[in-house]
Image (cartoon, rainbow, N blue to C red; front, side, top):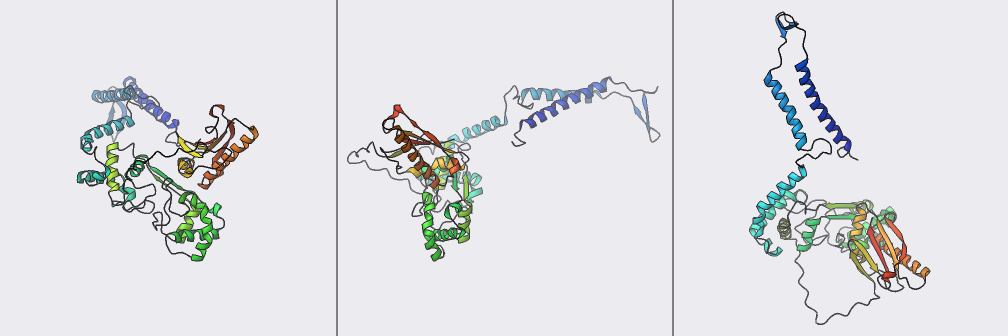
Length: 427
């Protein structure tokens, strides 16, 4: 535990404070009660330079009065405000509470300013000079430190003026990024690739995807190794915005130059990038204006048009088909009878699990089976389904020691499709 969060220092400071107050009181008491031995002329007998003598006069009353006021003020302060260990003071004041109060007051003062923008879309806000002026100030004060005053980014910080978006450039996705933040993880892959020579071959193949200078011979040899990367970047290398995996075919290299040494370093060492969440600092209205400002810098993607109503109702999906859902953070894979094949969309459904593991948690995989039929066969099938999910997590870069498998369970209440499932959760 850090020294600055340890309970020892709180007790230490409280002790020093109490001892200091008691020492002041003791000094006053001693100075008022102690009688010095004096001569008939009221001197102590101390003489300096022949003529300078020390008198035995009492302390000035004004000085004693100020000293007493100081002690009383200290005692009153420690009663009203926090200062003695875990005691929070009779007024309940805290620095956090004071900060929140001032922030709320500031937000109330500017609320009328943002009220006029409440009914406007992102596209409309991006064309409103007043809204963009406010967005520019919000951006300069909070975002320019990383993305630059011109929003063109720098090494490790994306350019917001182009059309390259790791997490999506629609208004909804930009607002989601600003509100909740992002954590992009590229795990080290050298062990999965093979030898250093294999890594160089793969790096040249990655460079060839975007037309960057590369060794064509090595690129040809490295193509087969790209299967390790395809789980996140896709088999065509065009990326996956659900995982924040960059498009490798557009020659945009915001983490460094598009050269062999840099790509080799990324494969060997991986990378983690964090975009902080701003929902605790900005109001929803401010986030809306800031979203429009970022979207309007030139790189935003238009919101998708509403899908036309279907001419006829679509045929229902067969109840025995594999599927995947996410319920309160738990990923649930449902399987066809007697099958262990994962439903499409597994990578997207597991994106939050992968991010959670990279943040220090573990993935717990629990297999469930239909209680009907042969129990031994059901248990074995549940294991195969759990192994399929485990292998998918490993393909997404999750280390095997970060995955825990739970013994299969029979669920009588969920007989049928609901029981033929595997659940993945973070622990």
